[in-house]
Image (cartoon, rainbow, N blue to C red; front, side, top):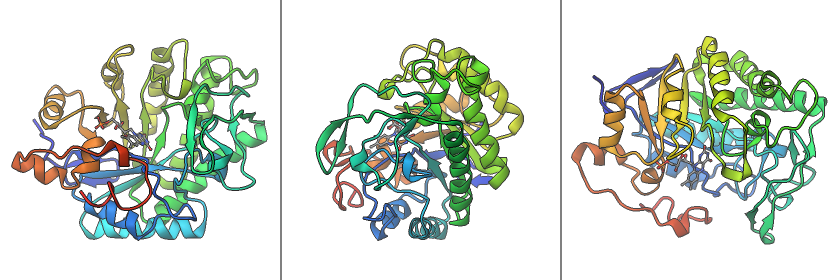
Length: 347
Ligand SMILES: Cc1cc2nc3c(=O)[nH]c(=O)nc-3n(C[C@H](O)[C@H](O)[C@H](O)COP(=O)(O)O)c2cc1C
């Protein structure tokens, strides 16, 4: 029976251990939304993880939602990510880029001039988000995407995957939960379309499948993962039957032979661990694990690897600490999203 310290192959990606770093937005990109030397240092410090999944990275300017988040659109951004990847690889680590299109979870204050806020339907999310320019502001009212917008967005994901791998990334992960664009298409509360991208379950699945088809064609299925959390209500997301939606998604993606399925478990509602067992390939589980609980999930064959979020903020050497059974440092929550090195590269 493997433990978290054993290596694992995820599609084309060989990982030295099964202790992964979960994707975490830290709002510390530079003025061009590109990684800086500070970001290089942050990821290099965490390179002993079996796999680093980067913070959410926008695949197009329209896809940006949050303040000071990085993209993979411009040459400067590709160059910045290449420096990150080089530093991680130099220390023997592996890194995949999480592609995150926020859709309607956005504020114009946080986005480059001229970009749009798009969603399957013109339904504003309830809630607010932080901007440097105006503090907390309500979410933007999105434009309903035209068929041309949908085609373009699929193409944007394809290009982003190509650029991520060109920058040296070992793969990409499609962010398909937490109320962002792919999840907005899947869910009945956010998708009220009457064309082939809305209505029936088959139609609601179409956008995500087209994006996965595009990025797997571009970089190979063995370099593509997907992150889900059926039933996740974050960012005002709601679906009449998330279990049915995601069971259908898993059934469709099984023959694609993706590198992995990354699943956030839920404390109540949908049993995401049971759903994850319907995936034919490697499963990464997440949320509130520690070494012991992670090893138990592996022993129970619920997971092949575990991703750790908050522990990785404040324990860059998490693998070594787990090995030596050392006490973990707690993160400073006040410094999660603040610019600058404090609470970022000083743990
Ligand atoms: C500061 C912070 C930023 C996050 N940003 C992202 C993100 O960009 N993409 C994503 O999929 N999840 C994001 N998450 C969720 C984490 O990946 C993870 O699911 C969560 O922290 C639970 O895992 P944990 O209990 O090991 O911390 C974020 C979490 C935190 C704490």
